[in-house]
Image (cartoon, rainbow, N blue to C red; front, side, top):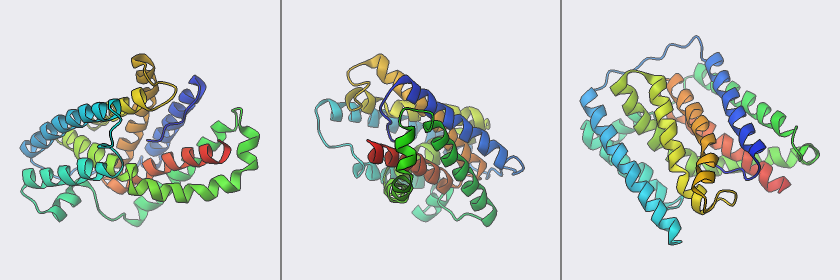
Amino acid sequence: MADLKGTVFEEVTIIFFHIIAIIAIFIVFRKDKVVLAEESVKDAEREWIFSFIWFWCYFVLAMINHALKLDMVNEVTNWLLFVLIPLLAVAHIRKENWKEALKSIGIKRFDKKTGIKILLVCIVYICVIFLIFSFGEETQDIFANMPKIMAGIPLFMGLMILTAGFTEEFFFRGILQRSLINIWKRPYIAILVTGIFFALYHFPFAYYLWEESAGSVVNSFKTIIEHVAAGFMLGLIYYRSNKNLWSSVIMHALTNAVIMAIGVVIG
């Protein structure tokens, strides 16, 4: 997820608009019945073990990478670390070819009804973000530069879909969360636990790269708390859309795109 640097107020507002998005998802999808495909619990357990070990390997690698200022962990290598290798692992565990594994993870088409509902959630989400930011110090700048901000959102969203919006969702929602749901049969607990892992994933960035938390363990943990709410939101829309990964990819990309567009335009 993109980082919005600033005050405690900004961190609280980010958590708040994620909560609003969660409420919107529950409302919009309230009549939809989630159909969980029959999947092998044994395979799910193996996927979870792989995901758990792979997560901590990545975490250690990211800490070393940022501490030594290397370039082993970036948006390009994440395609290998979060997509290609996990995809091959899932395909091997499930004894599927890569196309079948992609479908199991959630790479599939929207039906028209689901697409409209996701669009509705996105519209509400954008409105809430702009409404909340309108109460900040940059109110006049935001409204004065609204055309530039809106023009920048599609560009940044396209970039995010090709990078973090897809790679992170593929691993965290498509593999880690899905395997936990299949094992526990308690989707909302699985969504929350995955959200915590998603937040922890951002710790190396918070500790080494983000200005307001760099060098401080306490501030880094404070900074990544917002990502638990973000992770729950993304996991929820993935689950409520019947494990369609594109739903969480779009929401993830949109979140980053709006924050990036505002940050670039108003500084």
